Image 1 (cartoon, rainbow, N blue to C red):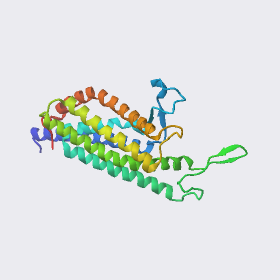
Image 2: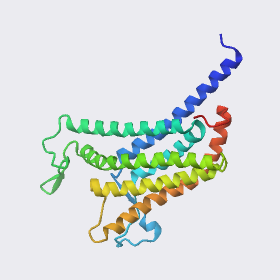
Image 3: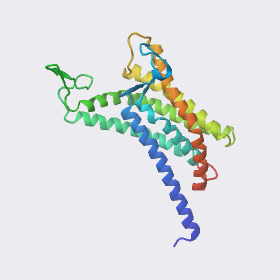
Image 4: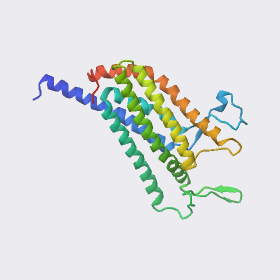
Length: 263
């Protein structure tokens, strides 16, 4: 039978694994929402910033971005408490999840595929007696089209941004001798989110051609505002999560009885 010390050690180890699985699950769940929802809809926040409705420049966010900031908070928690190896492991699992999402979408659309699919893989809406006839499965193929277009961009941007986040976080931790938690949390997240915002917008436009670009305005200017909109949203949340990160790290280190980084 276990002695008291063995039971305590087993209990602590169980806690550590539960917390790790919870953080990894939240990370992967948010990542899945990002890829499936992606650019299926853009939220126009221009009027909140005083931009007139007739302006060719808009301040818009893809709804997939809404869940994205939490992924960086999760990897920062994992980096701080469990170390670089675990954080990188979660990033790699996330990449595999991206591939799995694409495979299921491809499979679901290829099995018993409607003969009415056009060259873009979409179902066309016909008009009969002035009424739109929406074919069965239309919403799935629309979502499939947008997800395919955005997920490839997301995969490349995701890998660059998440590994950047982990690398900068640990580089700053070494440079500050483990102090200034607020610095490595904010700088690593803001740096990686800039990488992500630039990469995902440019790849989505130039590779997938899946952004709502207006013809009467400069493409470069519109891309700049897409990047700016996405990045500012992420930066605001990066600043807001500093206090929860401090409190959460302090509590989890005590709860999990972790003194130094596990690597």
